[in-house]
Length: 221
Ligand code: HEC
Image 1: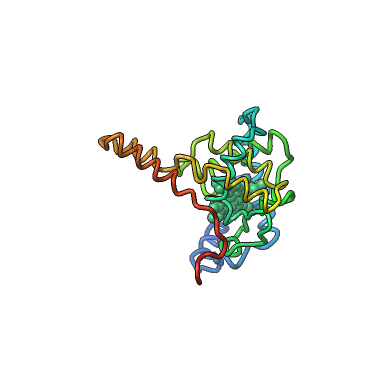
Image 2 (image 1 turned 90 degrees about the horizontal axis):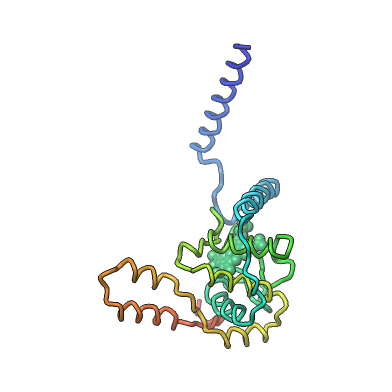
């Protein structure tokens, strides 16, 4: 028994040394244009879904995700913050999306997302948008200052998005308040403390005001 345990321990130590040696030698390619092998990709995807399902288990979506106001507000924020990576109706790809590994799913297509639909999928999306996904391009928008109601607005919009034509999408974004969640302006103003309240107010308004309609191809390179 003692020898067996020593054998297990020695195997563990040798394995750890070998793994450390490989990492030190720099043989693992971390380039974003050298994606994981399909089996590794599947393994990471499985672990990700297990972890998200566990973390999102207690999240109960609000009852009004079909509300037109929520969908409209979500459209403006989606266009400002998500469209470049997750695309819009009528767009096949974007520069940033091509360069990312994993590739962000096309959320404008019905098959662009995983998940089983219904409340569990809404909760899953809420969790992903709030917390992001480690070691991918998906940011934790909660860290950036997006409040929970703005995230639910996005979840409401994501339900509607695959059913929109390119024209519907443009009309909805035009009717929205643009990039309207408070973002960093509010927490930064709170932290500053000494700042005059009218300055803080002006900051929030300035942030909300850069409601930039997404003009694909407008930059010149
Ligand atoms: C810089 C690129 C980038 C931006 C910007 C971005 N995402 Fe993502 N997002 C990703 C990537 C990459 C993934 C896939 C991560 C993975 O496969 O593990 C992802 C995954 C997701 C998913 C899960 C999709 C599914 O069903 O599997 C949702 C929902 C999502 N993002 C919503 C959003 C929303 C809403 C915004 C804007 C507030 C946003 N993302 C902004 C890159 C981005």
